[in-house]
Image (cartoon, rainbow, N blue to C red):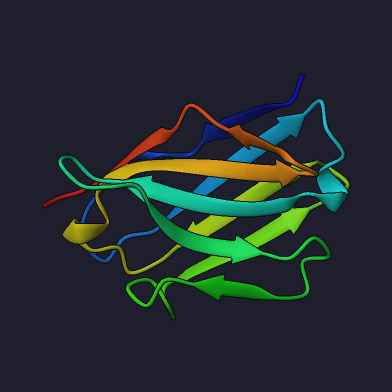
Length: 116
């Protein structure tokens, strides 16, 4: 059974940085499509960033382009999201998602709060 566990969330002031991690197990990470989503209170879950199986290409929501970087380490079966220049509107629960074959896995989420 596949599992994803996020970590690295917390509270930070505007302009600050955080690095989220998503540790995976139970499925072949190196061949899984990986992505980060977020959900703010009262809003639908939205795609933040996606990275290819090889890690060679990535795409971002317009709202985070130039500030967030998604990466993956297949030796550690871990997905990352480096978030810089954080803004209050980035406040949300952040989730990682893996698609392995026809199966979707989701983590439990990690809270990110950006506030002065």
